[in-house]
Image 1 (cartoon, rainbow, N blue to C red):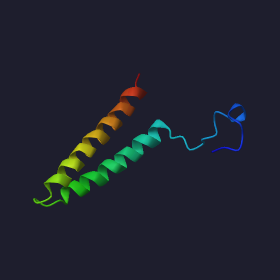
Image 2: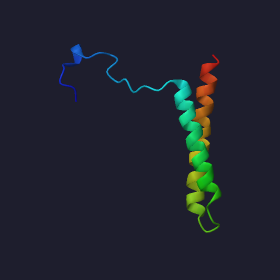
Image 3: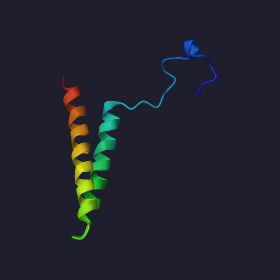
Length: 72
């Protein structure tokens, strides 16, 4: 919580904002890590495989959304 009243706080108090390129790069890194984890799973780890596959799909969709929005 900020010590300043809401009316006195700057709109730019959160200087940790990512650019689309930075966000895309982080997503690509996470996609790579998730793909490695998925490739390393054995046959008996079906539940984790399903979770990682779902996560990977979501990461790819988020990355695609970033690139689609930058071309508009």
